[in-house]
Structure formats: C-alpha cells, structure tokens
Amino acid sequence: MEYRNFGRTGMKVSPLCLGCMNFGRRTTPEDSYAIIDRALDAGINFLDTANVYSRGRSEEITGEALKRNGGRSRVVLATKVHGRMDDDDPNAAGTSRRHIVEQCEASLIRLQTDYIDIYQVHRPRPEIAIDETLRALDDLVRAGKVRYLGSSTFAAWQVVESLWVAKELGLNRFVSEQPPYHILDRRIERELIPMAQTHGIGLIPWSPLAGGLLTGKYTREEPSPEGGRYANAENEPRLARRKNDAIYDIVEGLRPLAVDKGCALSQFALAWCVQQPGITSPIIGPRTMEQLEDNLGALDVDVTDQDRKAVDALVPPGRMVSPFYEADFGPQQFRALA
Image 1 (cartoon, rainbow, N blue to C red):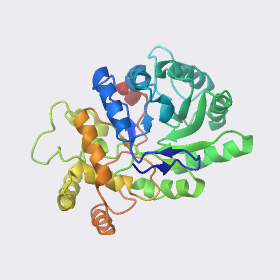
Image 2: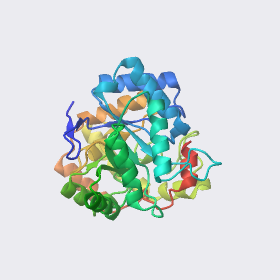
Image 3: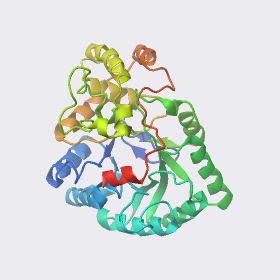
C-alpha cells in the first residue's frame, strides 16, 4: 500500500479513505464491522464519518469497530460537524461555538476515543463569522480533543479566507478540504486544486464515483435499479440534475477505456481520481463487502497519459456535466442523511 502525505501535516494516509456514511443506515452494524476490518487488513488507515450520518449511529458503529479490532491507534480518524442533530432545537446545527463544542464532546463519546485526528466543518455557513468557528475549533485543538482541522465543500476563496483569519488571529488552520470530485464534475481543477497545492492543503474528494453514476449500473435504456440512490431521482431536483442525459454519453465513452485495462468501469473512474494531481485520498463509501473489494481493485489500475487525454476529450479539465458542487445542499439534505 502506497501512503501519501496529508497536506503539510507530516501524517501519512492511504490513497483511499473509507467513508462510513452507510454504516447504521443501509449497512448493518455487523456488516459494517466486517467492512472496516477488511479495509484495515488491506492497508487503509484513513476513516471518515460525520455526526449527522444516521444521527450519530455511523460514529457509534465506527467507534465500536475500532474498539473490537484494536485499530484506533493506527488509523487517522476523521469526522465532521455542522448538520442538524435535533429538529426541535434551532441551535442544533451550524458552525457556532455552542454547536461545535457540544458536538465534539458527543462525537468523542460515540467514537469511543479521546481525540479526533481530523475535525472538519461539514459545510460553510456564511451567516456565521469564520473567526467564531475557528476560535472554537482552535480551543478543541489546544485542549487535545482534536489534532487537525479541515473543511468540506468550501469554495477556494472560503478556504483562503479561513487561512488568512487563522494567521491574523494566531489560530490553528484548516489542513484539508473535502470537495466533490470525479470525471463528471471537474470544476475544482479551476481554483481549488491550485490553491490546495499552493497552501499545502490535503484534498480528500467525496463521491469519486459520482454517487454510483460512474459504476455503469445506470444506463439510458434501463430504469434505475430499485433501492438505488437514483431510483426516484425525478422526485428530487438535486438528483435529477445529476442524473441527466449527458452522463450516458460520458459513461459510454469511458467503457472502452475500462475494457482495455481489464477492469470494471467503477475501478477505472476511481483510479483516475486517485491518480489526479493534487489529490490526497478519495473517499469511498461501500455499502457492501462486494463494493469494498471492487474499490480496492482500483489501486491496481494504472491510468496513463493517453487515458487522461481520452477522459479530457469526454469532459474537458475544469468542466462539468453532472453538478455535485451545489449551493442548495442545505439543512433539508442534512436531515436526509440522518
């Protein structure tokens, strides 16, 4: 297993990060424990979850798995804060000091650990001053409850603003950003990736398979598989925008590249993301052991310059055909994750 520098922290992480969003939601606890064990056995040392995933259940299962296998000390454990945790409490969401401190304590209990390696702000909150957020996060670092700080789905200018405020106030800074990134939405190549390379920010993309759109299971001719994420996309505008007619042309163009490699389409798409400049560790989100094994196989796929040119011809650098970077990922979507 090749390990990569995590930004400028000195930490080494695996080229794939195990995302735990499905645990306690679509994946049973026992299956989740088995997936985590297999990932660690394969060399993955980086796990990512969030307080809002199944309203804390994902953190509980992740913490219990690491307690059972004794793996806590050898993994980089990341979680996130921002999502709504109580529908009846107006303060139970966001990036205020009150919510951050309260939820960090709750996450530590659920994860059965004394510290969080990377504590990430799940989404920007423009109406809350970034210094309010950073001061609270800095206190958690100084208290030894958090080792490093990160952001998720921040624009490049928002990350740079946070770096400037941290420098001006002498606070711990963000060391990572977690953006959506895959062949169907390459917009972070315009500003975010160059910014991250300049400032030593680790990039850990979420949804490198475009929520399953790059697995090949969605076709122009067949209806979406029952129970799949896009089964009822026509009833949810955000998903309908992503699963549009243009994606099928891209998928059909990618299939020959995967065939030439002797790998699955999903493995080629994931390998492309892993091997893109500036990327640290894409986050995989397996629901089953079969999906995890498929994801692990991507590490054996070599993406050549010729392959990249073929992908660029389908979706030019910095362009998008399926929008994952959207401003409408608000409280209603976070409730959907609970």
